[in-house]
Length: 275
Image (cartoon, rainbow, N blue to C red; front, side):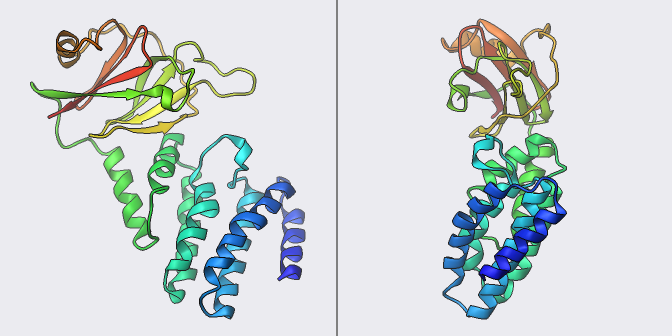
């Protein structure tokens, strides 16, 4: 196996300008070791072949820039898949299914590299909770459809409020202007760090506005937003009248299905959902 690893690295170094030797070493000493241990309980020859293919695709991912080092502070599905999901879940599949599952994971992860950043964040956050690789595509397509399609119920005369603490993701985050990325996904911009500086992205956060709102982390969004000038929706006005936490809005936003608001002196996001 040592000769295989050496030959694989030499080939990758010759093919890829972006080859990262330190990242390759971390991959070998972490995920590859865990994968090897997981596959050890089955047929030795078949397990070694799966492990070699996993390493080949991992080397390809490093060379193409799909696999991020932990120090990057960025999230993408490929890194989650190769560093966490595959070593944990692939050995649990029947041996005859492992090679096909590995190929499917590569195709899915590579396709996601061209997806909008918020789609990557969504798949990373919810994909991290996967407990099996069976019906992987169906599960993730279900997530994507639920996030991208308009909700089945529009805001009406009755609604419910949810409160989302955005400081959970970023202790300095001060919610400001917002815009919808999808009917039920909002991107919130930090009012004090709305432009990129010092090599870092502008501070933004995504939230999936479902019954239990899902924080999506940094959106990498570069859109420049103008201060909101519209009146708060009827549901937000009603919330301010009945909830002492609400009101003194900094910015409000609504569409047919959701309403959201940031406040002058709070790190919380008010979310209005239909009942």
